[in-house]
Amino acid sequence: MIASAHQPHFLPWLGYLNKVANSDVFVWLDTVQYRKNYFQNRTQIMGADGTKRWLTLPVHAHLDTTINEVKIADTRWQPRIEKTIEQVYGRAPHFAECWPPLRDALNEASDDLNDTNYRLFRVLLQQLELSHVRVVQASELGVGTTEPTERLAKLCACVDADTYIAGKSGREYLRLEVFERSGIKVLWQLFDVESTAYRRQDGMMVQGLSVIDYLFHVGPQRTRELTQQAWSASR
Image (tube, rainbow, N blue to C red):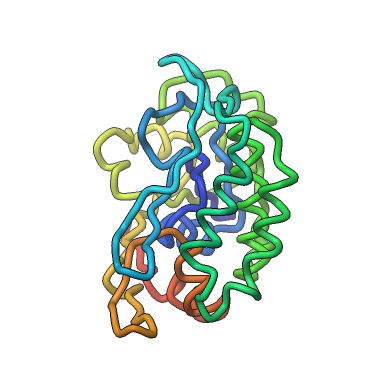
């Protein structure tokens, strides 16, 4: 059983979904501390003029707030996000196909950041044909330890995983001996972002943006292919 885990991101990039696609079970890590000005409440998109911009959910969060406690601050955030996405991508080739279920999830979400991200994430899994991956929210597993490696190892044990996919940043803090004692192998995700580049209708090459940029421009099937072809792993 292969597991991966990651903090919830707002409309994440393909590297995030690449990890999900290569897992049997994905742990939605909503019990860790919220990180200010990071991808938990924002994502990067690109307008028709080729200018990159941040699509952001403004939030209320103290330094010690866990992700599943964060509230969205703007009472009109849903129409604002909807308007921005429609202005930026309304003329993209696959917008009419891919936007409605995401729009519905956005409008059905509460003012909880975690709820919003989770609803959108589930729609993305459907669009990319990744619904077979079991998704478990860490907040439902009752793992209380806050030490990063111990927490991940215990989460893996809770979902009966014998292999854990770790991102490259994990090399900076993961203590592999903890996984070894638990009988869990660690695979390091090697994600080749350059292999996910695609050419827009205007000839511009694009890579590394939110998954919605890919969905709206090249469609679900090609987005899925680009997500999966960037995978490689090392022990």
